[in-house]
Length: 185
Image (cartoon, rainbow, N blue to C red; front, side, top):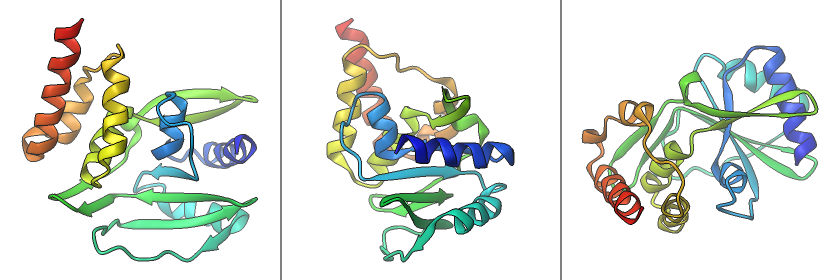
């Protein structure tokens, strides 16, 4: 997978596109989840058309099964060397409540250099919210355990990005998580 990520990163970066890795591969980077099946790449709205062009040139496009709980503006899957890569732009879902995650440059949390290629990663706190919104209790709990083990949690961009009053059940979980972390320390 490392070579695939480097190859994609090089293609995207040469075109100055806005993208970052999220999902299970992001969790693996933090040691939260040691298994992953697919690579989720978040893409900004202004980069999606060009990224689709790149992917159509270098990968096999896969069919996508619709799920009525998701209304994402753009979701497509590709296969490269038996690895599935999901391209996601403006993630929208409707499980407990209607939710939209529009990825942009400010949502890139870290970058990693591998063989002189910059690889971008989404913010873990963003995925904490996303996993709650897509009703993945197991993964939400894994991220909470990561933060409870002593990792830094406060993030001004996070509070501004998600307008915590707009997603009350996430706000409550986030507030309770902060209390557990900072009262324990």
